[in-house]
Length: 260
Length: 335
Image (tube, rainbow over the protein chains, first blue to last red):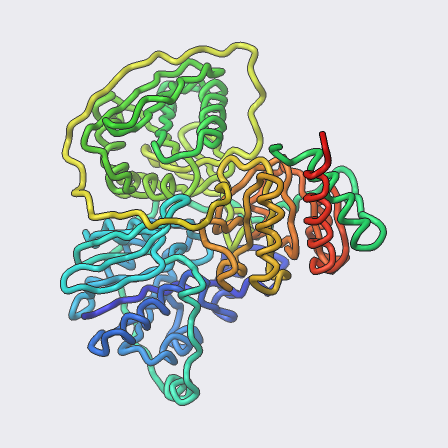
């Protein structure tokens, strides 16, 4: 069983944004301070759990990076995956979700053997909102489920637990399949063993080079810091001890919010 | 606007969506249609077993309402909905004889259906927009990136554009509202094969976030399950819903269905009680600007206080039990 994990990574959200917000500065931020997003981590942990359950599972990771020295490649490889590739999509802007999906699908088709299961975080990078994952599944022509927490493999099917609106469901999908994975306490990424971190430090990584042109029909015309919400009046700070504050809070909540 | 740059606006309503979201999407689309003199069509999808309970509301623009029924639409998967939407666009003669802007409701289903339609129809996918503009032959979409910290402005001249729209600012209510022309459309084209799905019994008895008038929400500052137990009791006492930030979902203190923020649900209750939530842009992106925020945080400099109506600086371990006692004693008082 071959599992592919597509991991985009994000710029560390704790770092302040560059003073001059432009696409190049944001790309540099991601290249210099990359992190796996909670959704990337969930997808990776799910793959590792499937290998825990069946040691014959092979895990390949493909990570869009600008160079083979991107620290995210080592971070991922330190979890003792079978293969980790970089994918050069520098020429595809991250907000071109369809272009990114085309590139990822093309990269998957270069793998030998082809994966039976593709796991992707439900948001693919800093500028995706869920568009990319659905399109990758469409491009690969595989069965698809979104918002998956956990998966069990059964011969030529998977049984996935997923969120659908306010309820959870079990879904049975034929392989090959794509699952967009959501964050959950059950899929918190494990820490790598120190010996595997050391091995990953010495690794060299191959890049998947895409020769085909990628379509793009959306242009970015402006980038700006998100407007900060402001209030016309200052916050009314409740005075007194905890009991006094609680009394006023109760009044406010009962007066304005309760559906009683 | 010249005929050559006229763009038809098509709103696709999904059977899975929240009524309030639908209403605000329709009003925003009608305002756009009225401002730019664009024809407006509303395509409401449903399965044969689903009763048509969707009223076609009067709108501040002339619109055509298509009630699209497919008996085979049993499973509301996004690929089935995208296929049915594509069939409906063709059957309702909304074929691309003129450029189109196809709008879907915000949220995971809308985002995916918009993406799949764009993919199939060689269109432009603008993603989840907060604002959309038509500028001659171009469509301009404004949406968030980097966890809600930046705003991207995207422009496309593509004839077929697809986006979801979460209109934060309500368009001005026009005095003149018109009932849409209604058409029924029964479709029977092939839909993707349904897969085997079973619901999992939920033990969570609290109301869902959708449509909640009051939400009690916790952040990383709750430091564990114990605090969320108190929040749950307070929410229950107030007939409210329980929510949380992304880190609290990752920690397992609350299920992902109750995650609020840029990567979670967008909520618009009257009151949002934020406890142990610092107030990052990522989290605030999930709360309507019309919601009154009341904050409890031990850090007086927490950004949440700059957007809150009222705030208590203190330890939730002292404030929440006292609040719950007060709510219980108030409830016990004779009316």
